[in-house]
Image: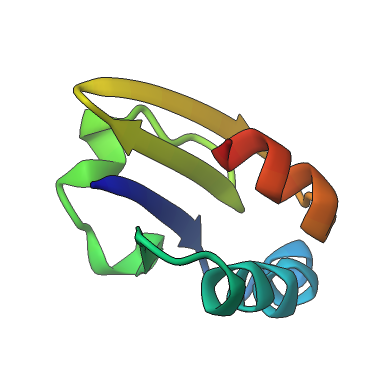
Length: 82
């Protein structure tokens, strides 16, 4: 199953702008797992995926990892997920 992970922080302004768009896409896409991780909680996946900026979106599918930093529109996010 394709997994989409959004890395964010509560203090991040762009993250607050991006969250509603991410949540909208999550509610519309069937068969895709969506997760949000707060970088201040020291999740080991922060290092595993090399997250250096927030927001960062990571797509994991069949062992392949794609990463995009910054705010995306709903359309851009859907295209990035594929």
